[in-house]
Length: 73
Image (cartoon, rainbow, N blue to C red; front, side):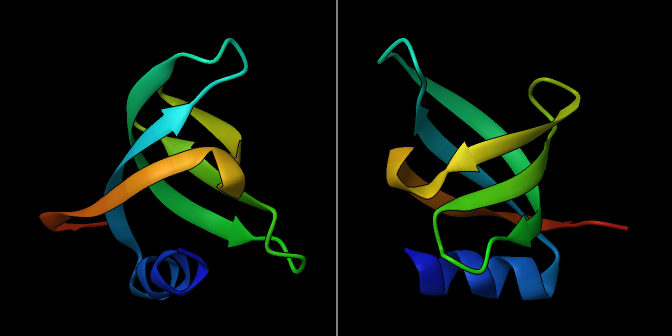
């Protein structure tokens, strides 16, 4: 998972992910990764679903896939 996230971050690729939230419910998010922490525990991202900056625990990311044809900038 870390390797894939790093690849999408380097390419500024917008991704779709399934995320397990604090309430233990899953949500579908469309995000652009802004930063991977050095410990590999969290990502900082802009969430297009919520129109806000968010921090996501990598352990709670259940699945990721690129949004084809969509890059940031």
